[in-house]
Image (cartoon, rainbow over all chains, first blue to last red; front, side):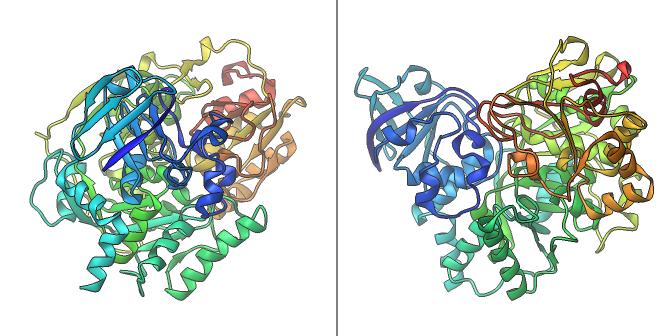
Length: 164
Length: 417
């Protein structure tokens, strides 16, 4: 899978209350959730984000609550991939389960700048920063997680077992 | 193996597991609330599932925006109610019976030693205090578990925290966990299990043990856990709704790290905005005036928490410069507080009492903050905007500091009262 887009850069410990404040959790509508995306940390995000864009952040991205509304709002806002130094574990699971691409890299987030354009090749495991011309390699997911992703998310996998 | 490894091994039908392994486990209880269940139910129905794996092993607890704060919240709750009715879910709790989930389920004997529990709520880690493996997941994980009764896990490494020495006056489980998060940071236990041990923990009551395990997630942990002992067994004795088997760790269990903490050096703690890791000893807090004090939540809304606050507030008035909000976490806590005169103390002190709810903790309702306002709360998170306005601030502390500070109008030690 290849992703090309512009970077929206954030710091460390971006939490789920910042990604989507709890007052908006009274709906499961993806489009509505997208309209509040990142409002707890960056009121202008939703105006500037374009389909295909990429979020880059420091360590512990998505810490805090288990609300799946957080990765859903990011995905529905048009973000194709989140690259962070590390992810909070529930956010990590949720992103995989709903099919939002995430990349853990200790190195890349430190060197990629806000507004840069990235070329990500998830199959080959590479990130190329088109703006700075820097290249980074990505560690692939274990096969177990790749199976969930290739099935199209956890529930698609569950659906297969239901049919058996 | 550690307690966590042993519980995981038992639930995937194996003799042993090792950190890093990916395994599929059966779950004893899967829970969700009025925020996370609607998404899970949507996913459940989307795949065409006709029935739940076991109607006795699912808990639906509408506690976040209840009693319904508005029509939208009411519609969310209706989704839970209708689903519970359709699938004859035994652990569904209507307003009037419902309470804050992580106080309610241990009280009702639904979560037990040796169990494997998942919950679509990050503070599901609370039940580690009962010697269970218990962790937060998302709504999709929960939906899958409602169909299959199973969930996938990566076996975590375990960090052992050993609490030694004598506890100082006014130092509670809340202070120990805030101090610990201050030492290791909000991602200090990321992907790890936190096992709380040592002579201090062995003497701690269930309420404070639950407070500590509740906040394991605030250090990024997968779960917090305390080995079952007599205190645990006494607690579950007359509550357990089904039989259970406690699981104990091996003496030779391997830990990724062992951290020893000398409690005699730990003062009551206050976590400054906007991360739980910003904890400071009360002597180094300085002058911080507050607009609101909240005593309650899944962290500190139990009877024991209210009892400490009432002891300090007895025959005293909350400062007229602030609002004091007290939220008993469940109906049982409420009833005991009524019987023992706690509510009269709170009412006389000028506190507003709310029905059991998560309410203001996540900026839901019943005490949301406005621009520039400062709250001191016994809750678990002080992220930017957590309790309302993005321009508000939240400080975290124990019920004792909260009560004392409510009297003074600024953050103080109970020693000053």
